[in-house]
Length: 114
Image (cartoon, rainbow, N blue to C red; front, side, top):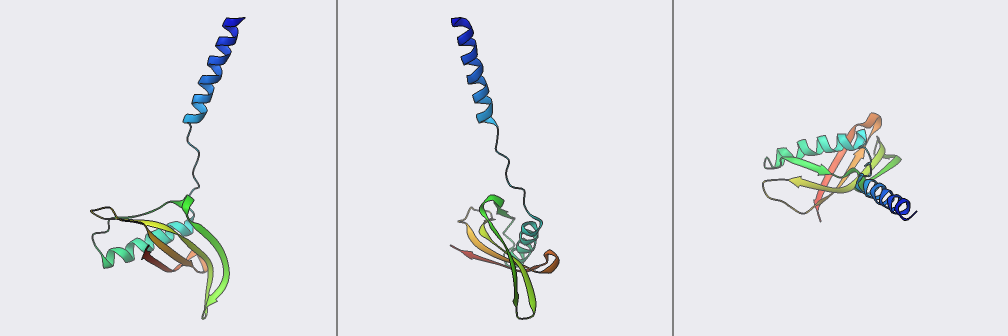
């Protein structure tokens, strides 16, 4: 009986270790977030060729639906979060705001240092 309890305990420990080692799936990036990243990186590279990549954690952003206008231009979404600009040396995160128009078109991506 003791052997059976010991085996059951070891099995539970093994299963618990397996469950803890599994990675929790992350939120897949939205097409709008990918569009903001792509257009933002292109604009940043124009100003500073030393920037090699733009890293945005999709789990750390706020994606809000909108139904408003800037003058006559419809705004359908606003994305805000932290972005890391990859350069030759590491930097602090930048805050970014991205406005999305009709059909997922990026209207504006704005970066600022914190």
